[in-house]
Length: 155
Image 1 (tube, rainbow, N blue to C red):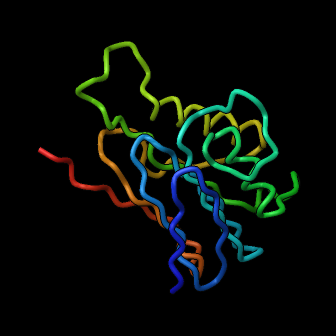
Image 2: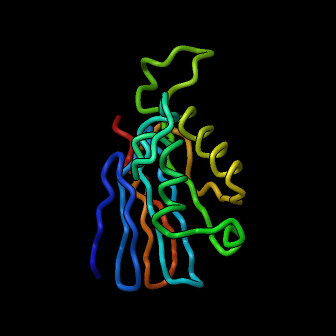
């Protein structure tokens, strides 16, 4: 199997025989699974929203990642129902520093993911979000399975 590691701010596409994977903390992973076409996309989003719109293919911001996935997979509005979308991550990696009544970047990233997926007509499934542990997110492009594993919380 060809492992493709998706680093912070990247969007990658995979096909049969590939394994897309990323490591998340407060970042959010967005997976597009298009089984009918045999194409898959994974974005690793660092921050919620860019200050200015951009046509660059990127996932530094969630607001860029969703349009980037759409462009790379050549998704048309009528195709959105064929695509399974999953989000993971958004942990509070600084829990000891977080103050009450202040949303941490993980929460903001998750809210932005939901917003931009909704705006583009996608139904999505949260597979492992929030908490205080980092995660790895995988797409097995041969089976179309999306999975997430959590790191053990340090004591």
